[in-house]
Each structure stands twice: as C-alpha cells, then as structure tokens.
Image (cartoon, rainbow, N blue to C red; front, side, top):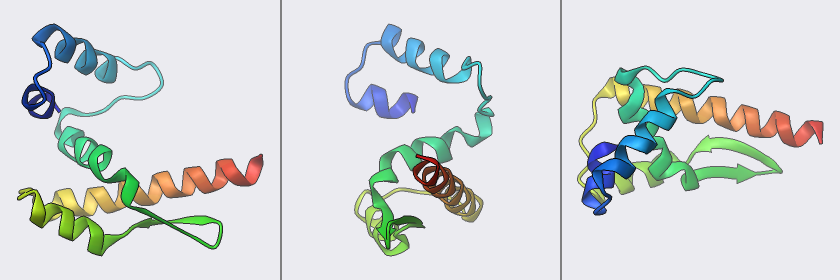
Length: 100
C-alpha cells in the first residue's frame, strides 16, 4: 500500500496516517504479511462477479488480465489468499443483503 500511495504522490504524513488507521483498527487485525493481498484486493474488488442476485467471487479471467496488463508480480500463495479473501467478502455481502 505504501508503494501505491507513494506512486500517486501522497505525502509521507498522509501515508503514515492511512497505514496506522488500517493497522490500528479496533475490530480486526491485519497481519503485515497479508498486506500485499489486502492491497491487491482493494485494486481488483470491482472485479467481483455478481450474478443471480448474489456475489460469486472474483472474475478470475479479469484478475489475470489485470495482473498481466499491470505487470503485477505475485506468488501462488498470494493468489490463493486473494481468492479466499474474495470468497469471504462475497459471502459477507450476500449475507448482509439477505438480512435486509
């Protein structure tokens, strides 16, 4: 995330504030080793598939194309974690929609 904000020209104090806010959230903890996957998901979250009134997870082909076009480097483990995160979020969004 730091690299992305720096690439966008964000000031160091803004970057620190954003990272502190994410890592000091009172509802959950994000382990440092998971930050690359969280940042990756934030970039591709718009690629969640929605069909039949439910979120179905990530459009894997679109994620692959996005990774190739942006020259994203990732490990197989990061990809698996991205898929798990997308599945979890899809389920949460579906549960939230069902309860309303």
